[in-house]
Amino acid sequence: MSSSDIFIGETIGTAILILLGGGVCAAVTLKRSKAHNAGWLAITFGWGFAVLTGAYIAAGVSGAHLNPAVTIGLAIQGSTAWSDVPLYLASELFGAMIGAVLVWAVYYGQFHAHLTDPEIVKNQPAEEGMVDQTSAPKAGPVLGIFSTGPEIRNAVQNVATEVIATFVLVLAILTQGLNDEGNGLGTLGVLITALVVVGIGLSLGGPTGYAINPVRDLGPRIVHALLPLPNKGGSDWGYAWVPVVGPLIGAALAGGLYNLAFA
Image 1 (tube, rainbow, N blue to C red):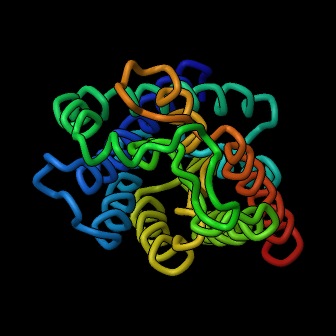
Image 2: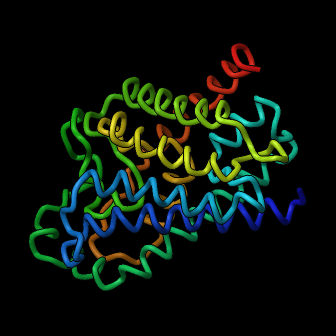
Image 3: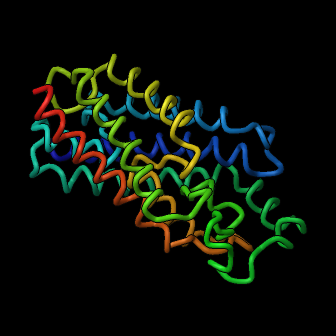
């Protein structure tokens, strides 16, 4: 697999993943969307289909990691060369940022209408972080479209949730069998992974919104900070390390356990 294959596959696949995953969050969140208030089931299945679509597109090109946690797990397991890891991670982050910009473009009118609605503006906090430390901060009325946040703000619990959820994801990927090249998902693996993501969202997503993918959170959070959105509020950078560190730890544990118990 060439460097250009990795860059093209991971960039396009991750962009599609975030476009569809962030898109369902926008559809449910924004007041002038036809899917407004569709609920958690719509979000969890929307993200599952996002994984399915992005991974099918990228599987034959780059192995469809689309997630630094998956890349790290595969590197520890031995299927992905460590020398390829930096390119995978950079391509995934770049693709995630592209996908987030595309969500903004698709819902441009809805973003403007939502963020200029008097009820939304009235409920904006005076400063980022001026909230009860046990509740999710009101860092911005549309931040949840771009990134995750905890319902109860407790760093240990939040990290543990992301570690456990990502451990399940990566172990499921490693044990289901990879493509013929052994460097990523095969056709059946794409479907199984998408269903696992839905299951994780339904079962483990309640506490933190289940990032289980560092760039799924970090890339769109950067875009949220940069986009010219009126009354958007802060980007909650105080929490941003959790959905990066937690999934990476979970991936490392899954890769290590796979080598001990399944290899």
